[in-house]
Image (cartoon, rainbow, N blue to C red; front, side, top):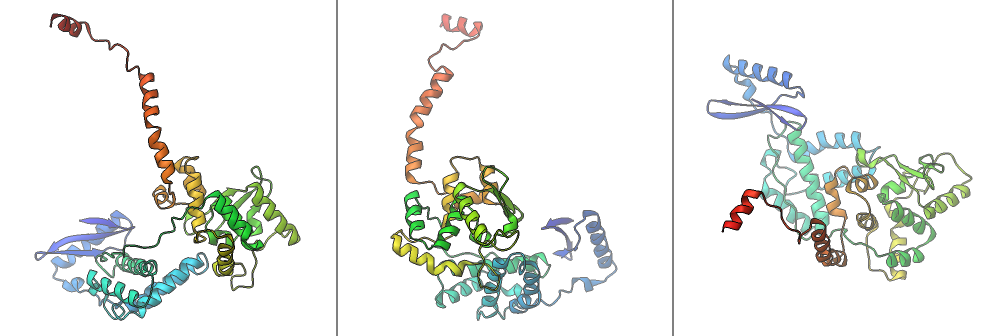
Length: 371
């Protein structure tokens, strides 16, 4: 029989008491059935060469020969941050004493646990170790998708990872912005008012800013980690004031970076504002938070006021389930919702007529009267 794994079909059949699984390399079910018929014919004719398995490469060889070229061609230009994430994770895998020299089919839960312990001994935080494990999981799944492995092993992550679930209050936002240097103030204001990812804001270009659409203009996010990330967002009054001031100071360019900087990419990046962010936290005395927490803050503020699909569109999520990681309702809001339950039930009771007489059929009324 044939079955689908990812986008391509595989063949499953029994031969001499053993279950065999083979990739067809086809996305069409008709062509996949033709491949299945050919395999069965060759087995019937005694051609057992098709059962000979190719040599499985080591993890280091697979990363170097297959994964690295794929990453470079796919992410280097379109998603530089994703490219850097892969590069860091792949380099760690190639240097690993626990995994690098093992064949892919020799890697199991025990070896993955050893790799996790190895990264912890190197001094990495739990979040960084889990990032390496996510890269390993992706590499193993690519091996399965490309037919090198029959099934990728399960990768278990470490518990206790530091999450970016910090939500800033409006007071904390004001204190932070007042203590920030002009560049950090402007970039952070755009993040607070748009919910854009930091790298999306860093890569803003003047040709993506429109002054006439909407009430105060719009901002087009042209690049992102998925198709859903490419979207158009309305500009708030204070963001328009910031962008207009920068546009006029730059002599009203028609194209170019909104936040130019002497970096390899030509625009600011996370490292450009790291020191300024730490200084603003120290001066404002706001409890420390990561810049990405601003995105969590925006999602949490918007959630009670818009429907789920609108929120997904604004934030650039590919699925609504991602909202579970970004929306963090406060205890006060939860308690307030619970406190309103009696009033809601009371209103519902009045509307449904709890105290009204219930009309019964004549036969049932006659039976009640008799009893």
